[in-house]
Image 1 (cartoon, rainbow, N blue to C red):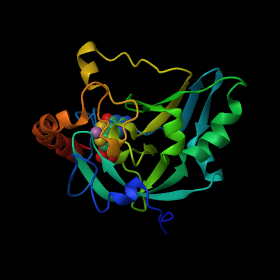
Image 2 (image 1 turned 45 degrees about the horizontal axis):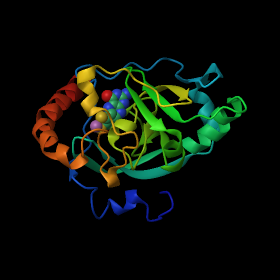
Image 3 (image 1 turned 180 degrees about the vertical axis):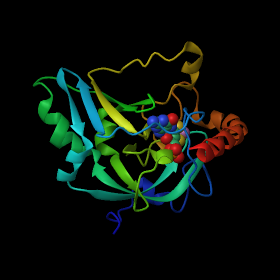
Length: 237
Ligand SMILES: Nc1nc2c(c(=O)[nH]1)N[C@H]1C(S)=C(S)[C@@H](COP(=O)(O)O)O[C@H]1N2
Ligand SMILES: [Mo]
C-alpha cells in the first residue's frame, strides 16, 4: 500500500524531526493566501507548460490517468517551524511527468535549470531542476486516500517531502521552464525572506540570506497568529 521503505530523509523524520521543527496536531491549511478561500477549480483543470522555447501547451489533468501512479508517506515541514507528520499522498511522480510530458518538447540544446510552479491562487515557487528530479517530488491528487480538498491543494499539488512547505505548490496550474535563475520580482522588503534556492529541511535551508537557526524564534513568535488566521480561513472555506 505504501511506497518502498528505504531510509530516506523523510523516513528518518519519523524518528527525529528536521532541525528547528516541532510537530503539530492535524494538518492545518497554510500559505500566503490565507485571507482568501481556496481558489475555485475550473471544470476542465489543466497544467499549462511554457518557457525555455517550448510551444506553450495545456496538459489536461484527465490525461494523467495514462501515467503510472505512486504513493508517498511524507511529512510537511513549514518554514515557520511546524511539521505535520504521517501524511499519505498519491499521484504521479514528478520525474515521470517530466520525462513523459515535458522533456520530449524541450528544443534540442536547451538546458532547463529552474522550474516555477504556479497555483490557481497565483502563488509561485522556484525549484532547481536537479532538485525537482531527485528529491522525490510528487504531483499529488489524493491525501489520505481522498481527492485533495481546497484546503490542501485541489485539484493537484506538488509535494516535495524534503524541502520546506513553500516548495509544495498547491492548486498547481502552470509550470514555467527557465534556463537561468528566475527573478520573481518580490518587493524589496520581502527579499530578506526570499526562500532558500534549495530549501532542504535537513540542512535547515530556510531562507537565502539569513542562517536558518536565526529564524526559529521569530517564526515561533509569529506562527501562532498566522495559524489562528489559518483556522479562520479553514472555517470560512
Ligand atoms: N498555491 C499555494 N501553494 C502553497 C501555499 C500557498 O499559499 N498557495 N503555501 C505554501 C506553504 S508556505 C506551505 S507551508 C504549504 C502548506 O500546505 P497545506 O496548506 O496543505 O498545509 O503550502 C505551500 N503551497
Ligand atoms: Mo510554509
